[in-house]
Image (cartoon, rainbow, N blue to C red; front, side, top):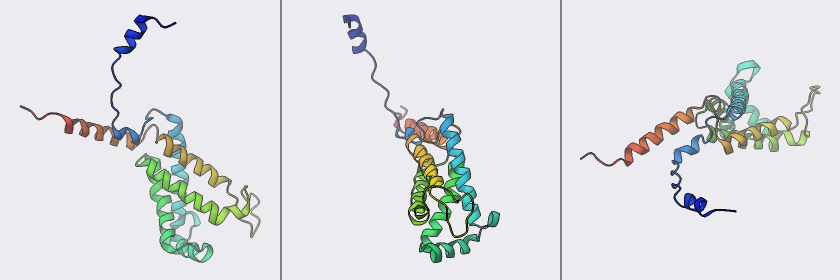
Length: 181
């Protein structure tokens, strides 16, 4: 049973402090699990993007764009967006810079990859590397899931977004101070 004294204490409780919009950049800066997932996603995306630029046996910028257009029917400008999403988005995820935007682009790119490339091959990867058989969409599904987690929860620990948020809050407070007399 609630006492009168408990009701009085509730009535005089201070109102919660208004949260700055900059908090949206990284609402859980202590979250280590999200950091691990974000960093892994960043490494995978960056490595695949660099491969498309010619590293690790990739075909380079023009060769990849040609493959996108001739092999997949994807216009060169969208192929360029895909490469940049992987390279820039992967790097941004790795360092925690504009993480939620990078995660959105990665999730969108992986959804397109599922629809345009992997869905006809079923769920599983082609572990035996059977010629003429592509990979299924299981890896893309995991990448979409991790990107969605970062999009919904923020980048977690060790993210530059945290420092940007702090700077924005500080600037917001300075801008709201009354002028000196």
